[in-house]
Image 1 (spheres, rainbow, N blue to C red):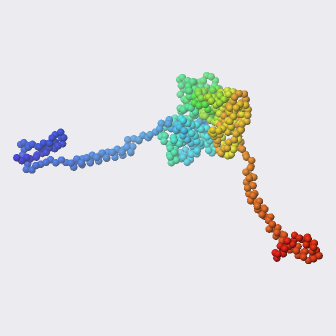
Image 2 (tube, helix red, strand yellow):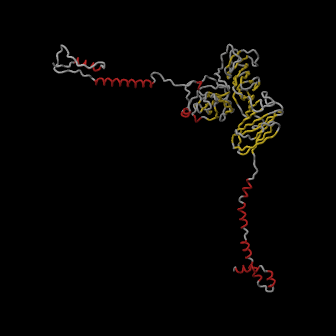
Image 3 (cartoon, rainbow, N blue to C red):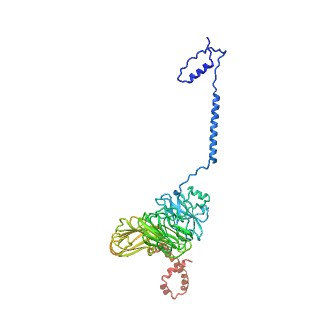
Length: 572
């Protein structure tokens, strides 16, 4: 009997082939079915599967392209721009007020530690980088801050002119541009926000509008919060708080108690103009006192700068530093004071009779002369009890005469020592002689050399010490160390270039002398003498020839002459 493959059998076979758990078996003959003349097999449709897969892939690609287009077009909203928190921006601020043609100080924060920083200024808004003028260079400290004193703007500037300042760090890039009007106390605003990626390329390739970040008065060791013209009064102000001003405002111009208003002022930087400092205080005929306990992190000399209109004075630990307790217009006054490490009390008093009222203060480490470090030991050991800016008569020379006294209240009168350092410009290269008139001991180093120029540090008594050093033209670092034993104490240091005698000049003149000597010797040679002698000889010969009577005499007289005569006669 013939067996025919029907559709059901084919499907069963396909099912068994696709099932790995089944063993292929011979298909059975179907029951009660009419057998077709020829076997019919049901064929799969692989081409339809391939077409469906291609269509699905195309749909996926189209969806991806459409999504990219939607995102790039901003239909779903602008993409967020990565920003840097304002507190991490490099920041430049002016201490006090810019006064026309007067030096001013700046302070910077949030720069990279130990990086080189350059200060620039422009006088037009939206200036390009090539319109900025370099003012000075600085180096940031370990905390990323720096302070520069004594900057001056180029040209002749008048009050009311706006200058645009910017600082560029070699690593951190540019700070936001600071617009400051000369002669006005800058209005302090909140820190600038937004994109912090101001780069050198941005300034060089396009104009940059200044960001209105106000200048703020900075203390050397404080990061103050922005000030406002009307601070919110504190319910219970603490007069002993560290790093904040305890303010007392009076409704009279002479600080007569009691105050009409007390509060905590984060910063002492106000420009009330013709307004009032706060509730209960008149706009004219008022006074104020601010007290601040400040933690100074280093023992150093500090330059305090105040800008005010009308009268003001400044105390540090009850020592009067600035005294301008008088009527006057807007002015900036500075004063130096040496401060030891630790907490010190700063007190500012101010009065305003009428007109515009404003006051601000700032301070920074500053040295203009010798940096003096004083020790209460005679060998430069122990803590530094005093560090100050020593500028004396005859500057840059150093001159102190303390007699039987002490250099300062912090220093003992006997068995103390001092280490002075300073950079001095020597305009001419040469050998310099350093002279110290000292009682008791001293030694001097130049440019950090191990060998001192002179060394009598461990001796006692009055003496004069000298030493010489050969220096190139330019700046050189000097370090003078002084030791006091007992009794009188003084130190006078001076120097002068050693002018050597003009020994090289004669030596240079005598060098060509031997070459001239043979020339002079050869000049009067007998060649010309013989010529002169031969010329008159024929004359004498012809004259003496016709005198026969004098022959014997002539023979005796002209014994030598015939020798010449023969020579002369032989010549013709």
